[in-house]
Picture (cartoon, rainbow, N blue to C red):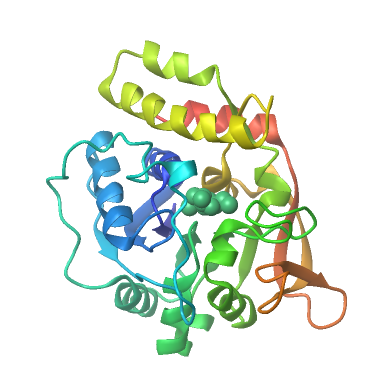
Amino acid sequence: MKSVILDVDTGIDDALAIAYALNSPELEVIGLTTCFGNGPIEYTTRNTLVILEQLGKRVPVYMGADKPLCRPAKKFPTHVHGDDGLGNQVGRAPFMEAENIGAVDYIISEVKKRPHEITIIAVGPLTNLALAVKKNPEIVSLVKEVVIMGGAVFVKGNVTPYSEANVITDPEAAECVFSSGLPVTVVGLDVTMQTLLPNSTLEDWRASGTDVGQFFADMTSFYMQAYETFNPGIGGCALHDPLAVGVVIDSGFVKKEKWNVKVVLEGEETGRTVAHAEGEPKIQVCTQVEAETFLNHFLGRLF
Ligand code: BDR
Ligand code: CA
């Protein structure tokens, strides 16, 4: 069993990733850390607690960064995730609360306590991880593995023609993580745009007759409508964040290539993740995915 810290900016596909991770016996999710991204940090933290309550799970939640390392925050993507970040389904405040320690200090202390044991799955902007590395560079050699959802290495972006949402939200944080020496695997749009959850799935979730099935269907319906608006005829929504979890459960879902990946930090191409032939190829980039095998695995685990 892998010990995992899941760093989220919950977000609809983050919620799906949380459900997938917590229902997978291969993973022991020891903590959820939150970052701003799909909403302000207060929302993404609240949403994480709401999802845990929906799933009937208890995992400690640690609140993290509320803004990028060195840029002003951009507008939140309410057109994709809803005004509340969960397709306008939140309704009430959660009963559970976040822990008193912050995400960055939690990541540092847990990695140092359990050297070479912790896998970090980061599916939001990489601000928490970058802050942890800057505060305590020693952790770089102590983390077992880092799997991130972010970037668009050989394909076009989803925010600009060049950039993917998590990377452009805090490009300096992504560059810091990529150049840190951490053992990073990039699960980017190269593969996540191939793993679509078909629209018809929501009827199955509703037919389950459970509250959680209904909640997840209503929430995901908002995300699917956004996908249809931006990609007419697509027929589903991308399972970005769940695929990062899937790669940790079974790396056989994807094929990887090692590249020297750098992030463009200025100009029109800001946020672009570029694979360079020169320099040390130290980042594992997922380039192919067994989409159907992954989708079936995900669906079998969700509730
Ligand atoms: C990523 O951006 C966010 O909106 C999603 O939650 C995902 O992590 C996809 O580009
Ligand atoms: Ca996310």
